[in-house]
Length: 130
Image (cartoon, rainbow, N blue to C red):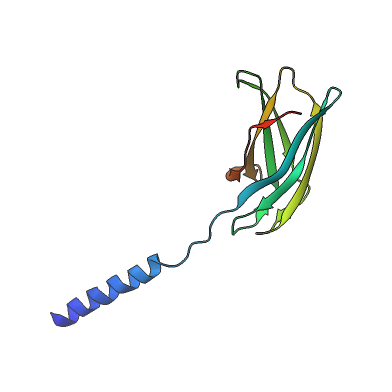
């Protein structure tokens, strides 16, 4: 009986040790110095994307949702980031231009890995259109 209890205790200790293994945190998109400005009827979006997570971001797709003064969505612009892979701790510049959505005054950003899996975004906005 004591041998059986020792086996059970050993198994419990091994399970506890396995649970404490460090899990890799997912990729996290951090927007830095994002600027949204008007040039005539064109809206320009410039800034930097930083991977502050622990996994690489593959084929990052950013979605910019434009809002009116009542914070109702007016339009969405999707953009593939040029960098195919953004390693943890690395940055990628973003530059986008589109026709200004009518009545839009601000924009918020969401992100997806390979355009499929939603990623956490730090500093998603809203950003005022200047």
